[in-house]
Length: 95
Image 1: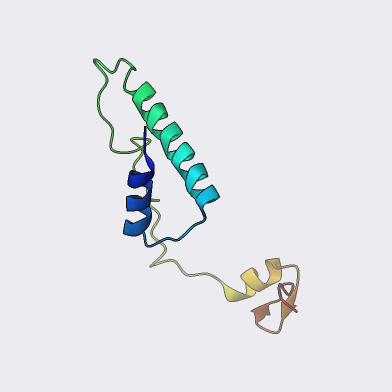
Image 2: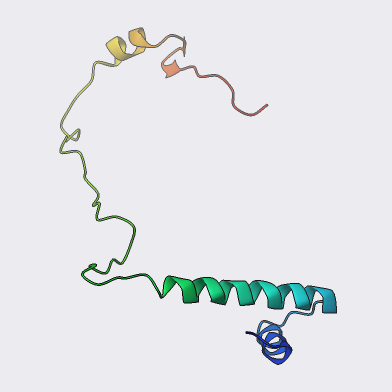
């Protein structure tokens, strides 16, 4: 259990000033957190491989290479629903 001295020490380290009522609430919350962590230590983790993150996913990138592709500007502009001369016309987002 966390006593008031430890709570005061943590508040001093974090440079926080709180009321006595808030100190009691904080002390109670910290105590509950430590009890929960203690409960987690009871879980059997034998034969469980440690992880450094939530998943083993890796980034996958497209293999397309658009550097050497040319587009017919006229055909592209014909395909858009609205345009202003040689530009696409899009709805305003901000007024």
